[in-house]
Length: 125
Image (tube, rainbow, N blue to C red; front, top):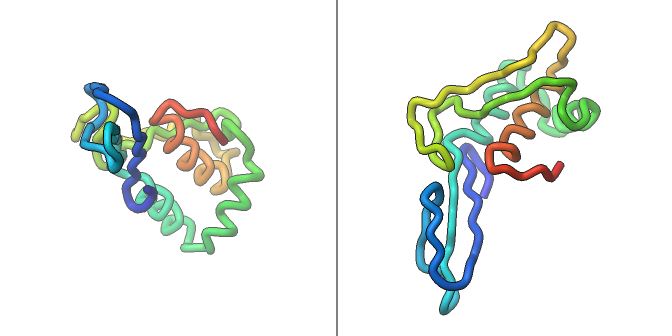
């Protein structure tokens, strides 16, 4: 689920304990749900959009696509309002590292999108 915050939910069979994730009874017999949530996700991309003068999301997504994977060394840690999982730290703070005057708004928007993925250890682009 993606919105102001984001949740990832995995359905597993049997008992599974992962201290960094939330666990609940699954929707089907014999299953459990493991979940993790980020405190900011859509909130970061919307914040950036506002800083950029509120262009259409489609325009920003196109610019982000042009930036390419890794956005030329720009890295964002999306902890702009603390973090839930996997680090469970309400005092965590966001970071934009590697920023230069050469980076574009598309680069920043792409870095925010990549931050969501890397916070959960996924590399899908």
